[in-house]
Image (cartoon, rainbow, N blue to C red; front, side, top):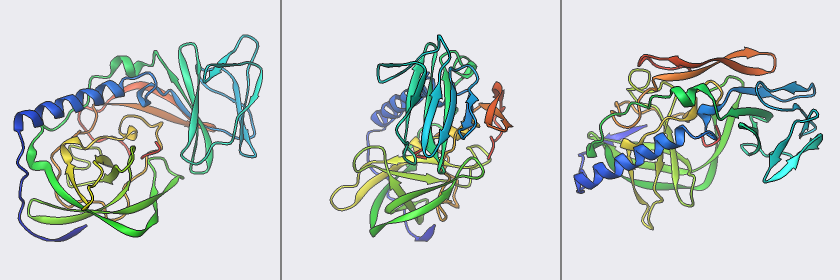
Length: 306
């Protein structure tokens, strides 16, 4: 949302330290992406229901009925949950919206989660081809001009905000605590903010004029440090990140709320990934088409909870 015109006042900072800190952040991002517990290891997305389904490359026959997820394991099959061995039949505690848990098996793990009111299962394999073939995410070079001082403007009460999802048929609702106001390239903007991953942090989901050109079309995210007592914080778009849906069809990432499309091009942060995990739609969900589809720099397809 554009508000008015003004003048940029780039913050004074040590450029060498700024570059080192960005490199450290980028290396951390790359390490997290290739974790066997991460989204690049997912081999399918399954909607659980009354009829038992099996997950490709993972143990058990899975169902969900009356808000309870169940698994039946064949002889010789075994799962673990928090170090506890599971064999035979097991019923799990109801999963809250955007919540979930992970069970492990030799060579992988299964995430059970609730998205859009439905229980889902997403198996992950330690030997997933994308983990082996992943070649890194291209980025813009870090530049302090894409840092902006911001003011946090809290709402009187958090506002339930419905947003779309990377997968059709799902919506997410988040409580937006306020907006962030900042000036960039002579214009002043406001973006709706959601709670971040740590106490006090905020999270912004946005698109801009680079979306669909050099950056992923649907959404990028930015973690914002906790505002100080006067509401001051910093938006460092050099750390604008792809959500999992930029890499895989098996993510249900939230899309930006209305008004969070910036009319300027944010030439900072992560660009469109070069590879993508593709899924084929089947009756029970999405199954793996091929492990790595080279995007060749072209845009991919169509938050916190992914």
